[in-house]
Amino acid sequence: MTTLKQYLDGTKCEKKLKELIELIAAQGVPIRKAFISNQKYVDTKNIYGEEQIALDTWSNEHLIRVFRRSGLVSAVASEEEAEVIRFPKAMADYAVVMDPLDGSSLVQTNLAVGTIIGIYDNGDVMQKGRNMRAALYILYGPMTVLTLTVKEGVHVFALNQGGEYVMIEKNVKMPEGKIYASGALKKDWLPEHRKFITGLEKEGYKLRYSGSFVADVHQLLKYGGMFSYPAFRGHKHGKLRLLFEVNPLGFIITQAGGKVSDGYKNALGVMPEKIDYRTPVYIGSKGVIRKLEKMFNG
Ligand code: AHM
Ligand code: MG
Image (cartoon, rainbow, N blue to C red; front, side, top):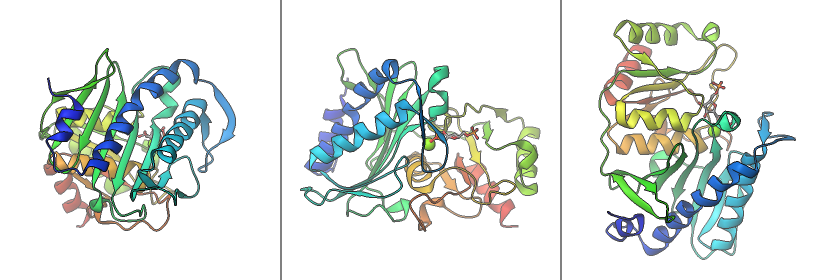
């Protein structure tokens, strides 16, 4: 059994990056525990005007505190914060982008949610996704699993009873499968999106949409296919955020042989205009995303 630590020791990662990844991975334990105690709606809204449940706020504050104390992180951009948080005294220059708890509307229904993290190594959070040094997510499902890439393949680890991550899948390569998902109300879909989805249904694609981006993308690593949250009527940028959600998961999927697109081009090549920049997203197996871009680009 390869532990996360043993795996990292065998990679080209510098010492501080290994420390940072292990530190983040370790937070899966307290966050998982907090599911029992932090499941109430609080009387606040996040910067997008959405209702926050306490576990979002808790996970956000917890991770920021951990990064501040670590001395490894000089900047953090979080989905739950309006501004970039800077730690000028940090001894390393890693910049972290994160969604502390993606899919949080599902917490109270006990469906899978996750912590999404992207790491840049030059202190800057406002850059193209493809410049990422590493990306990972911790998915809190029946098991707690960590999916990681340090640009040396994609590997999945599970948290065991002793609080250690052990590798359960090595070098994941996503297949060309037939799962599909689309966010937004069907009545608001734009014509080209509707046409593409109808085409997939005719080809026998099966619908699997949970309402948790991280969980919906995780299943694609195994089964293949496509997740989308498109531009829709009145929302030309869709719903999901480039920095915190699309880039880290897009980076992982790309490392696993898949693709991520805004419908027309690789989302990892898009320069964010602001920290809460939203983008339509199509993510999944290479073949289906290529087909989509071809259709959208006419
Ligand atoms: P969140 O980060 O506040 O949880 O919002 C993002 C989530 C995604 O996980 C998911 O794909 C999407 O919002 C679901 O939205 P909808 O409720 O419109 O289906
Ligand atoms: Mg989210």
